[in-house]
Image (cartoon, rainbow, N blue to C red; front, top):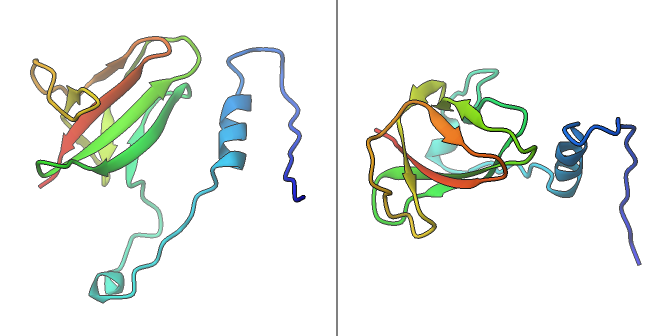
Length: 129
């Protein structure tokens, strides 16, 4: 029997970073290095692939859309706050469209500001050139 465990000092505030620390421990980043001509391209020393603002917003999934040239992001709000944020993809602020779990667009215009309600799970699509 092998067991991993971790302890963390935190405040009694429910909005502390304890949940994020637990997610970091339970789902570590797994780097992947391609071995082909794509791997020969240089990358800047520091740059975020995808980012959203807000300490209570978590990106839980990122994938290519099944039926179009877009990236699908699934985010959720974990502290009970309403969050308004921009979505940056490859260093640029992008327009997003909300979608359902089947990746079908929800009626409405594309927007530069994503609004996530308290404890809401939101699926969005980001068009990529």
